[in-house]
Image 1 (cartoon, rainbow, N blue to C red):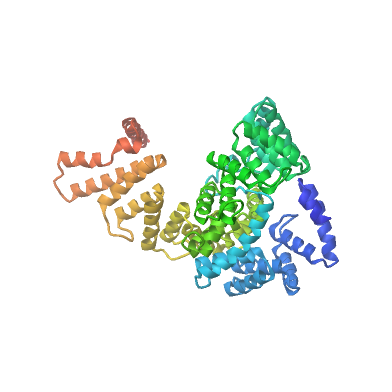
Image 2: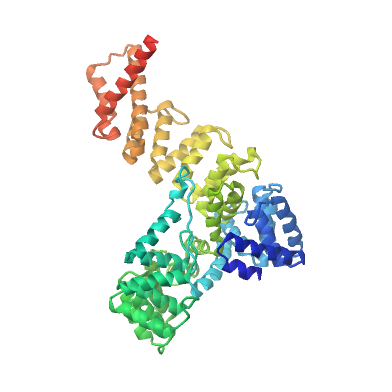
Length: 582
């Protein structure tokens, strides 16, 4: 009963009812209910978070052989949350968890072997772990499309998270509803799609989805017709499964040349739903939809050539279509590409490529829903609950979760870890995110070594990280920091020319760098001019002009740099006069 209510619940009140039932079942010794209660205590998903009580429950469950409890204890040991920080113990828990069937443990071990975290780096072992999880997810994806999850980056707009485009703000949603009612067809289709899958923080609601699609279809939207066809093909509470109705709507959309409609007809002929199985017809419709760039149709073509359904097996063609579909993020296409790279089918075998692709598929698992609950917990000021959820996702190898966890730890607002552990743990997580290609995290690594946060001050290492961020990611912040280090000879050989060049490059790379760069260059040139004067180096007018030109003010402050400089001089004069007469 509890599970049924939880799956159908939309409000917090209904969820609370489910947890009351779990509590009753847990008191009677039901293991699954006890697992639910332990998770609720750890993540604070029902009432207040209580890590100590969660650990007690997990420990008794682990003795009963609960793989979920073993995974949770591994995670808590790995961070030292409520338990002793112990990586060896964490590894044992994860190993037992994965042997028992925990997909999360499999994924964590996959990531650890891929990155060499407390184990020897081993691509083949990583591949084995990731493949098991990817097989499980692909099986679910074949039954339905799965849920795309919005991953909000806390680092991008800490000052105004509510404006995040990943989550639909309530006011904007009301405005969209108003436009949809006024007859905006595009908005009607968009709202229908959001409710169909349950995206951008909106609840999955088939009735609302169908309502908006029907409105748009009536106004002649081919996309809406195709989505209605899709709803009847798959079947749900609002649109019971009906092949004839699906065929009708897909045909209407296809007659307008709509790719989704063409793909839908292809599916009906491919699976023989409401029409006899006809691979030739299916192939024809899939090809038409694929030519229009519809990734699901590209995947279906790939699958036909891969499995030899109605066509000769052709791995080269299968690879081509899987690759095309994967470029739009089609998850099953990514899965089959991984399979081909793992086995060397139709392509040169590559363990690393297979693992990277499998990892992408694994990250579509239902556990990714924690991104939303973690984000809302953070927004509501429940920092500890948010941190635990992000930290678990970070442990599973999600780069966004690694940078979000590091960001929360750095703010020192969390209470579940001792203060002195926060910077070293954040440093560790920034490092993992940087290795996965996050430029912001790479700059953070430089900062931590520069200032000695969670590690010893090390200018040389700081300069190395800034160099990587500047060269590889074109980060203006990294260029500026590196320029400063060259200017003062910190950890690298002093080089004024290189400092000037990097300052200039930072200003050209980002408009935000214009003013800081201007002040940095004014300071650099002033110091050098004064030094030359003090040491009686004859500074000619020409040299002075050359230095001033070096600052490239048109670049740095835009076309009105002269007005800015005049304003600055006036401000300085007013300040000096006030002090003089004061």
